[in-house]
Length: 134
Image (cartoon, rainbow, N blue to C red; front, top):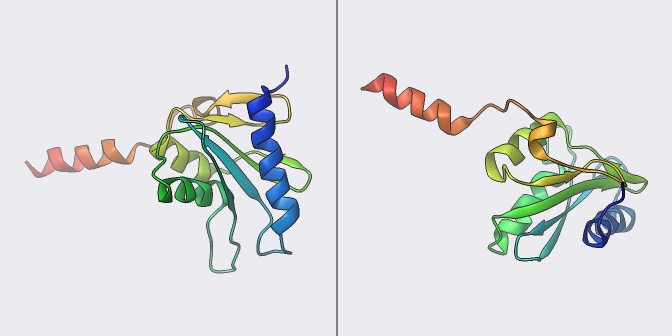
């Protein structure tokens, strides 16, 4: 199985950003995302000992800053290739763009639900709290 030309281009953008802008320990992973209207966004992680956002979270913010909230496909990569999203990123993606497809290798994309089959739903938690208050 191989990626579509559009998905391959998305992966190439993420790898390109990682190669061009990664700096030892502070920026090691890049991400690229395509919105449903075809626009592409990139982001780079910000590592700090006190914490920092992963590249997938940065790219979600970059897309939102341009008014794109419906992401179709996302990929994270370092200079060598695809990096599968961590658990926190899977959860955030599930909350903010639940229908997104994720590139998990140079030949495979999967729906987010395959990476996080039973996500915690913050909105359901809030509803539960609200019901308890009544």
